[in-house]
Image (cartoon, rainbow, N blue to C red; front, side):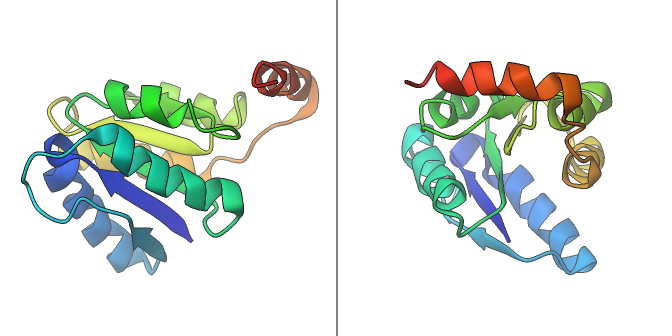
Amino acid sequence: MLALASDHGGFELKNEIKKYLDEKGIEYRDFGCYTAESCDYPDMAKLACDAVVSGECEKALLFCGTGIGISMAANKVKGIRAAACSDYFSAKYTRAHNDANALCLGGRVVGPGLAVELVDVFLNTPFEGGRHQKRIDKVMALEK
């Protein structure tokens, strides 16, 4: 189960990704927003990230205008490792090397075709562990 959330700037891109997830039969929960009316990305990020931290959802897909604001908010939630990505390499290696559990995309930066590719590689790339695990442990220790 994936957690999805957006502000108004990422609302349309989130809806495009929902179509893709529906086609693939991938389950998700949409934590909002539900219209294109202005709302605040920290509120939306918190709802989706809390679902990841609690174990209700495995990963989060988060959307705002640039992907940056919502990633900053998401990374304030203890246990979240969010990355704003706009290229394939970053989306792949944020999973493989950083064990990211939230992908953040910008509705005003990434088009729907590329967004689908980024989501696909993010969801299908496993964490490599090994030498990367000690670094993840150090990142997570920063929360203490």
